[in-house]
Image 1 (cartoon, protein in one colour):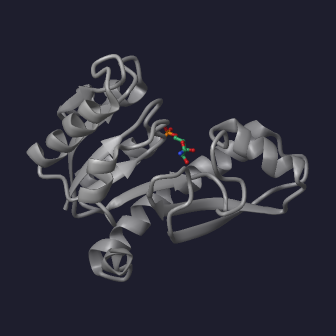
Image 2: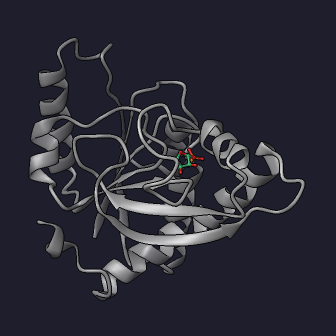
Image 3: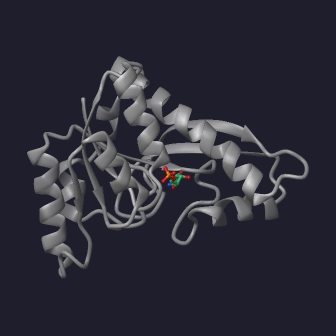
Length: 200
Ligand code: GRF
């Protein structure tokens, strides 16, 4: 299973998956990294890991259509089977989404459908969870469609909100869970315990 990553910032989820591939915990191959941010940690990590990487954005491609075509041809060039959005702040184009219809996965740091959608990203998610007085939050992995955070959820893991939690303590606990849970979910896909073909 060849994995293609999209990441805009640090890329710690991507790194956790790369490490799992390297140690043999996950029978998959990180094939390519695409980032819209040339200064991202994700690009730095790709360089360190000697994984082919590309900076593609509205700066490199002024029209969304040509960007979409470039993205799809890079994924195909690197024979990507599963696309992983790991902190990617942009939407994918229609050509890419149609070609990889049930094979684009996103990770979200809350229990969708709660605390998702446009504007719900990064620390804002954890702020909202704390403001709502939730005692449980978690991690959702879902199939990506045309909107933000609305595609079918394929796996969820709960994380407790502790009394006295701040955005910093809560986001750290959730991120640690994300790292493990993304790997576990990919393992379940490889074993066939999660069947992506039902989402075609
Ligand atoms: C994670 O919290 C993920 O759920 C969200 O963006 C963050 C990315 O973190 N979509 P990182 O770049 O993997 O460290």
